[in-house]
Length: 219
Image 1 (cartoon, rainbow, N blue to C red):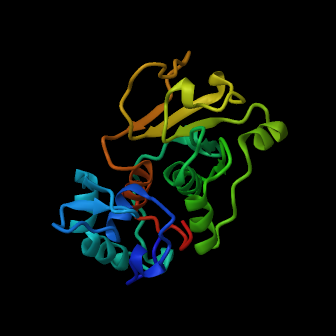
Image 2 (cartoon, one colour):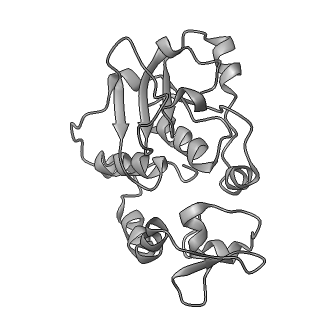
């Protein structure tokens, strides 16, 4: 969520630690490591290296999208009907990918984003920087609509799922993590989009692009 032409370092927020995005401002002495406050060094991950290598290409790709949605041709690509009007909610101890991915998925599938738990400082900064309202909690959403359809984002394990969610109401999962213990079990087929990518939000961004849909500036 950077303004065009700006890096995270330009913003000057050193208290936020954002995984791959953080590599855009934290540099080690040999350009292969990350140096945190206090001099702690660690090797950059492959995702972080790819973020750095493709930063310019990402900006070019975003700039190439039409400014007006009316200029985008209609293409009949698959968008799961089951996710329409669904509530998109991330995992407990929520983070920026979990919240941002829920907001993006809600915009893409005409649904509603919800929080599984209170947001951290990095997420609060991003929402404020881009003028995006903080989503309601999943408890608030389910109080109004107990039978709401649920799509889990950025997780698929029951140990990470908010206990207010009824597994019978889960209609989808959008995630980038490995399938390990305590993966959800459903009584019927649901929509699954799990890719071995760096973030869940990248999956949503890719789906926007493949469907030639332009998200709002905040998203």
